[in-house]
Amino acid sequence: MAKLELLPAVDVRDGQAVRLVHGESGTETSYGSPLEAALAWQRSGAEWLHLVDLDAAFGTGDNRALIAEVAERMTELHIKVELSGGIRDDDTLAAALATGCTRVNLGTAALETPEWVAEVISRHGDKIAVGLDVRGTTLRGRGWTRDGGDLYETLERLDKEGCARYVVTDIAKDGTLQGPNLELLKNVCEATSRPVVASGGVSSLDDLRAIADLVPLGVEGSIVGKALYAKAFTLEEALAAVSA
Ligand SMILES: O=C(O)c1ccccc1NCC(=O)[C@H](O)[C@H](O)COP(=O)(O)O
Image (cartoon, rainbow, N blue to C red):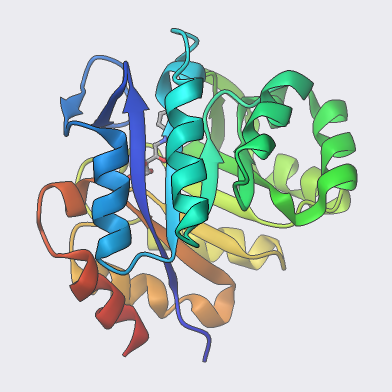
């Protein structure tokens, strides 16, 4: 059976690696240099990095140069990078892809400019993932601050347009260490044949094992943020738990 991929997260706000609660601006806990955080995950055996420009997501500026530095360094070290946050037009997409990242994660654009997203999916294939960030079954855009339509209607549309994969986040769980929303993940896997990356709420190795049990349904990976920063477990332990 395929193993669950783990994507340790580095979310960047105002030049710092931070964790938010429910993705809400103003709830930041700071964890220092994003490059040092990324290098720590690399030294611990990471194969992937989930790298988020929160300022670009919230529209409070951007950390473009720093994000590029981290993504380029990780790519040199053969770490695959999933880049997220504020990628909404040709300019931001070109800058993101120029970092050498493995793929980008589009959120707001999939809700607000669907024609552009359909076009970049057809142009870039599996370099494009779409983030389905939900409260209940309502999608949220603009740094998760605005409603953006129904999850399953949007998923059906994106599937038809050939979207390669989805990053699914239950915002109510994100940054809370309350465990992932396994029901949501199962429901999304039932609604699409495309791979799903789980995000939000992981608190323990048992949570990761429960997500790994969904690999046969279509879950391909899991992002892990707060639990690693809070030292609930180490990345080495997490990698061992999902490859057992
Ligand atoms: O990814 C985004 O674009 C984003 C936008 C606004 C707020 C948060 C955003 N991402 C947060 C993440 O991707 C987290 O790193 C991830 O869900 C990890 O969650 P957790 O393990 O619960 O800390």
